[in-house]
Amino acid sequence: MKTKITKNIFDLTPYQAGKPIEEVKRELGLKEVIKLASNENPLVSVRVKNALKSALGRINRYPEGSCFYLKEKLAKELRLKPANIIFGNGSDELIDVIVKTFVEKDEEVLTSQLTFLEYEIISKVNGRKVVTVPQHNFKYDLKGIKNKINRKTKVVFVANPNNPTGTYVNDREVMDFLDGLPPNVVVIFDEAYNEFVDANDFPNTRGYLNKKNVIILRTFSKIYGLAGLRIGYAIAKEGFISFMEKARPPFNVNSLAQAAAFAAISDKEFVLKSRKLVLNEKKYIYKFFDEMGINYIPSQANFILFDAGKNTISVFKEMLKYGVIVRDMKQYGLDTFIRVTIGKPAENKRFIEALKRVLLKKGLTPCANRNCASVV
Ligand SMILES: Cc1ncc(COP(=O)(O)O)c(C=O)c1O
Image 1 (cartoon, rainbow, N blue to C red):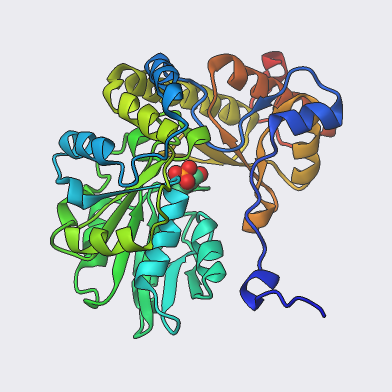
Image 2: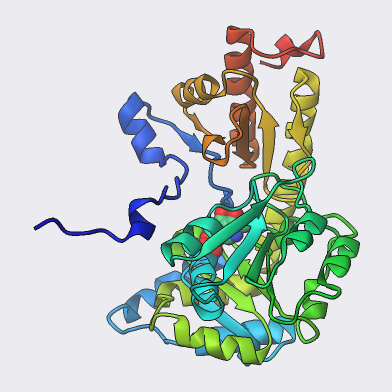
């Protein structure tokens, strides 16, 4: 007898993660490979490493199920109550928790096109319908999204800054969007890259927590440098969090992740250093793109989306041969674009040199600056 797979899963295109370093080394016989493909922090906090060493002796025990101590610490840091916070196995898991908590079978999830694919994938795994609205100039169109809200709309996901474009919606746009929304609609602001933002008009969504149906998603995977441990959190009014707690699996955040996040919150120096690195190096990469005449989208996050021209897939593959993993955007339907994560200075230099070699070799890009060959 044939085992029947659910339709939700049978029809699903799964999330494609960036290529792992070890895989590229193995496949291409390379010794040194750098990965600038998954928007991770290239640095690791020493305080976190030390905290992990002392937590290792407790891995025989199940973790603290509700992240009690970590919640208290973060609540203090954010000047909220512990009851306003829920932790997840990465903020990815909390997207699932949100869909399970709020969206009934006949209700819909609304979001933008060209955004974090997990909103759509997780909703579909749960058998929920997703409606997506086109962007304007690589930016969320909140007005267009608001126009699409109907009786069935239950949850709206807004990645701010957005992945993969790096663009953001500002305080005015968010205020207008939230004004007069139907009371049944819950808006999720996914602020995974919030700590890298330097725009003055970036919205303070926390101000809406008790006034509107708003949930904010944050993560320890980006500026805190804990992507490998999987821990993120949501903040919302107590009424929302208490129901989300029912939908989360028990022991969903492992004890090492909890210990690491606890230490990471205190390591302010590390956060500052990571932010400074991204802001400085972004300018360096922009300068290179400008010199090469490469179009890119100015970013508020730790990655940049740029136009690599017609033969993007071959550019992506050639870059691999130089030991540089970036992210092609085919899954997002952006055939000519590549997303690069900002790494350490030496890694960014290597990315620039490799991209330049590949593009010049292929004659693929107009070189705005006649002296650009000297950059290599
Ligand atoms: C917008 C956005 N939200 C959420 C996530 C997932 O983060 P986490 O590692 O906490 O699951 C990512 C990861 O790249 C992201 O880009």
